[in-house]
Length: 233
Image 1 (cartoon, rainbow, N blue to C red):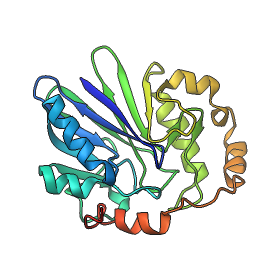
Image 2: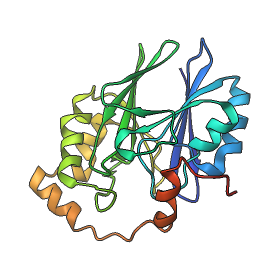
Image 3: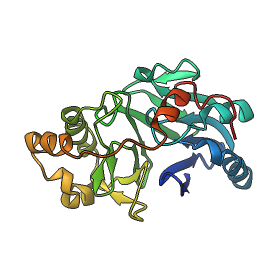
Image 4: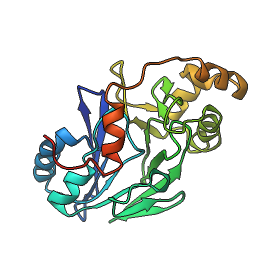
């Protein structure tokens, strides 16, 4: 499997390029619109063909590159069915398995950060990976105070779904603000402060974070409901 982790300095967002080494078919997870030329360059350098672009949820802090990538490469685009995004090729569904050569990408519905949050799980012969979006971060979690977020559902998604996966799974989050790049589920289970709470305490903690809204949320969410809108760059 070919895997590249890319970083957007403005939003501390991670984007991932995943490709099957045999068929050279590639997928991009959580692309950022203003990085689209960079993605196209990387795809060419890796000699892979983009066939699929996915968003883990409707983002509030950056504009998605789904629309631009579909226009440039003709790739299929997919977002959560609860996102109500008619611009995408298809909707994600819990349990769906997306195939690229030998790679199998399992779609896991993990609401809580938003109502339309999904994670993507890849289990290779030697190692497994979880692309967790904003559901589970390294030593943290996504917030739950907008876009129909719900701390009880986030707790259930993490403990009832994510932590049921093999604990040696490599965690690849959608963001990091402290310089972390990867972790494992076992590491997070042991050392993530938010995973040490019981459900009641977790809900209380999340309901009292009192964080400011993302700076461009009022612009980003409407544009992302149209897969990034027209090319405004």
